[in-house]
Length: 232
Image (cartoon, rainbow, N blue to C red):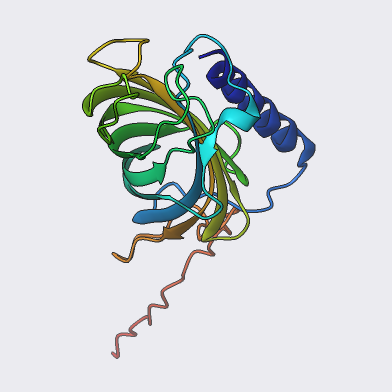
């Protein structure tokens, strides 16, 4: 839990420092979008000591992306996200205070997210907070003290760094409270770094990126009226 708090603080500090360092807008983040899709490299802290930060050499992860997610924009900074992922346990690392645990952990999560890009001037920095529900599936192992299927309540924090109009780099941390035994063997945290692709709306509505910053005044149009002359 302490490691998750440090991760949130570091994300906010990085976002704040970069936003203040930018005198002008590099990339205007839109008021709306249609979908966002992404893949991410993920590490899992499932050592069973939820109040203590896990050493880096005890994190479980893969050298390739193991997390897929999709984000649907709703309104005024709010969006919903669905996540699907899985990764194997490394037998030489802690899993709920035990080693030599074989198998995997899979998860499906749904979250409601709020983005703070408006508060940061709609620049290239897009921090957000989220909360939601999920399910975690662990394989049956004699040394695995956590239940095989666990519903979770999730709290997340992250930031997307937009590299272009559509491509961004996203860092996120999420803590999952297992509803079977809160702050026990069913709870764990995850940290991810991935790429996200944004799809604009196609209904003809122009977002902030396409809106002109300054409106030019229009000259009033004059209508010529021909005067009729009466012939005597």
